[in-house]
Image (cartoon, rainbow, N blue to C red):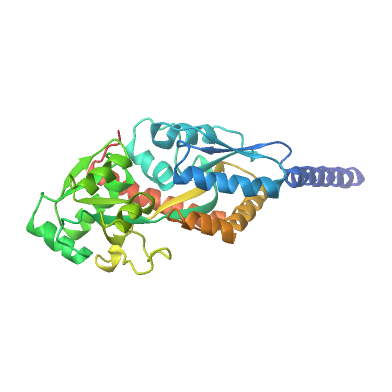
Length: 325
């Protein structure tokens, strides 16, 4: 009996030491620089967001948090690097709704699973996604635009950054729910799509306010609505598309991720710091100035948003037979 008790006590002591070791490792994190991968080129709203986050995390964690831009394959190259990394908190990602909820349904031979291969750390921000038209379009609100589109089936041309882009999906969802038929004109990126909508080559565009609002202020585009579920605090007087078409919503979010299987205590620590940074007045002001609304969440809440959008947009993309380029 004494031998059994001694064995049990030794086992318990070893287990306690193991837990203490894990906790100690988490408390000591980080002991070296952290890499924050951005899967797009420098200079865009995602990159700006990541650099603001890295600046404040560097101060909070006591180690450099280095932004590393790894663009290519619609965000897949940089995202795949994080999916393959060790889950030790030293390789993190600023990902988006498009990389994690849309790309897996759009592209064959994906190098990662958008939901299963990552640990959600926290929601970072929403991009204000706008619905704008060229001033030549005789519509000043969503209801009038629907009436115009129904009176001119197949003639209202909308621009996008390419098949499967958020611009494209926003318009396809609008067509489906409004019962209208429009003409899709894809471009090689968002910038030329905006330019041709301003020029009148295309008449309608769903795009981030960072790209459209300067033209709205210059009276070169008309702002009809935003696509989120609620009105944007940045544009409180602008209605949502859903106020005219109940149930319409397309929210473009950014979030922080790590590789799958990150320790829960490390996830909790990073989430706490990320939420603190996203709540800082100077960070909110900085992101407001480029049309990005900061956000906070628990890892679990962000995980639910990720899975919901992956299911919703994945089904829509497959049902409509949309293929990415």
